Image 1: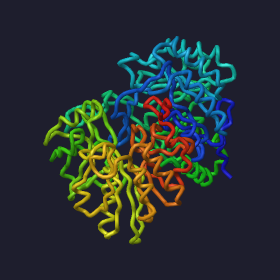
Image 2: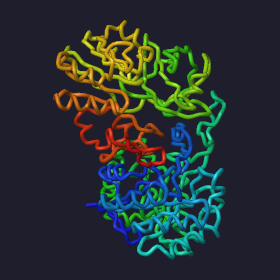
Image 3: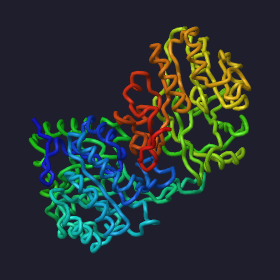
Image 4: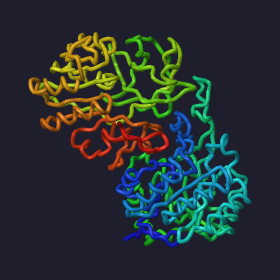
Length: 306
Length: 266
């Protein structure tokens, strides 16, 4: 029997699939619905300092070869976010990953402090949302020093919670940033966030998204994710949650062979339905049985041996 | 075929329904089942869900000018372009029997029920429509409803047409005489709650369209998930039957803002 459970930075997951941040919202009910459909863990939508409505619609649509979104970090603010998180942790039986963002390094540490009161298994620092440049300026995850400082500040107050840094592919070298996060004490990395892109509707002669620029996700970005995970795996010792364009069991295994310890799943819900978690784990099992793998760990990083 | 990338269509005709409501028709047979919706992109303003209506074979949307984006839409003319994504969501179901059905529509609810009414009339079923509005000028699609032979039970807040009062009260009074096989309900949530209560008490099957703020429309953003089931009103909803609705504890009590904050109904 192929064993799907994994150990991610000391946290046991029933399978390696983690609902990616920003998918399925902030409510306990929606996270429970994802748990019922087979996820190994869920990431709550990113929480910031204050209540934020985000951008006006259109905020999410399919451009044809993937999804394009600029929701704009809508969230109910840190206090309410922490209460949601507590409620989620009480209600769900799988681990909950909290996620937070802010406009400055000091502010992200403040939001993190509030979220940490709930003692989540993992806190993911969203250092790299591409959709708020106008109000937030350049992302931290593009800057080695800012990444280092953010991780250092949060790590000091983390207690037993594992701190993961979510990295952007929109940088000269994602590996430098990943190494900086590791050096600052991060327990893991999440790679990649969406890739910034622009789509113009030629009939209306204007960008589709209200924010104009938005994050690309879905199958089209999978090779970018595989490349990032592959290069990070060579450079760091901490575990990596591989995220980007995973739709099938083989997609997940591809990222695991590149070095991922767990897999983020998001846009796949659009492509294959909310039960995509069950579908992907079934496909992973089938592959593993055919190829003679007994555990997910055995497949991890095998592509580096070739 | 489902359009997930906005399909751009030019307005073919603008119909003034009343002082606050206009319909816009398009030269495209937009796919969709009764109760499903389209996300309409009003360039430069917003993207919002609207029921898919087809009257005399023309695809149209019906829009009340209530906010910035819908007011902007009201200023648009023939030839101006809008983007459409969809059809999205669950839909109303109609049995093959010949038994009468009833519909309760308030506000712009009739826009989500028009396709269903047409389908039922094709098989010559009796369709009792409890149409309610503030006054007689706001009774939506009235001439069309008469033309396709709906049995009308009108009500207005000011008594300018039909029963003076709420359509929910008129429905509760008359439903025993009609004995509908099923009741279809679309309108403000407070209206839906009252009709649902009547139907539960009388043990009449019903379907209701539950509106929640939406972003993606195709099930990934989580904005329209309801408590405690987590069902997405753009995929598992908006149309729910009486059994499904009984699990949705937030029905009639609260909804969420675009930021995810809970707002209780007064």
